[in-house]
Image (cartoon, rainbow, N blue to C red; front, side):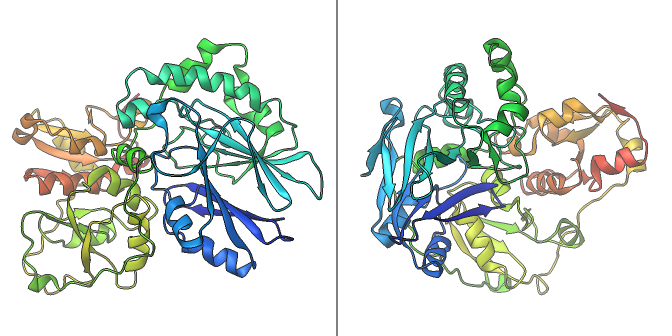
Length: 460
């Protein structure tokens, strides 16, 4: 048997390619959209991709299953479990609880594991030449290392009110199936630490059924549904706005993208940034602070790029991206994984641009002085859970992503100081507010970590 995990650190998303080395057949589970990765692995291992499967309708990335099928002719297996409202709307081979997919001498048995979503399934792998005992389970967003999938995303991302309590009850029942598996079965989940699909995902790639039964919080509530539901639904991370679009596009028929697109380089001095274009500056926050194009938004090119683009940018916007030369393909891949294909082109230098703006930065002492002024608002743009844990005394909270849908008019009469934990989100918020006409605006770019290091007053 051949096995390889493909892990996208930008979205903390795991996919898998498993092959029978006798028959040269292979299956890809939960592929990302830039599917050339799997084609290269299969070629290197002298395998053919003959099967493709998904664990559920994904919310956090645009699945590449149909692109991979178009390029390989592989059979596409998707869940037919759950209510009609959450059925895939394009041709596929439907799966129900107990169905078996055969890939050469390997088999994957379907286990319906609703909770995260109604149609969620897991795949139990057997390597028959070695043993008929199960050896691995691919859990998608059912069981993670140290956590389980959140059942509130249908409500948070898709607006299906009242579904999170139903999902919690389904998850509680699904976990009873999981504990019946042998302790030695390896657990390979769909996400790792950093994903918004749970709140305390472990950083290691995989686990075992036995380890999760001992260490995962969810299995400590086996006789206490009320306590289980209360813990499961509390303090979940904010669900990015782009999740709603992914839920839709992963369910319906849509245009396919069969290669990584190439976008042209653009000379800013010859381009008028007319209304309808958004300039996204992907340089470091420090470079942005030194000088940036007016009305540009700073979303740094790091592992958080796709997530914050999904929060702050619209799929209707035409995007021009300022990048370091040589980063064009990497940025394109990260954005195409969430279906953000509306890239007009790239800018690699703003050296010739006149009238660059500098960010207005503050240090801790000035923040401490100015926040006493009743006309000053100290704005904490971290998550709700971070703010609840502790924050600068006197700060007001609003999560950075929610600024897109909520910019109170009364803020325009205030002097605003923005901060987060270490400065990245504060710079996103600062640039977004600047673009939307807030001028009496300052960035405490060293943010809460610096505040704590200086021993200044906090509230908790």
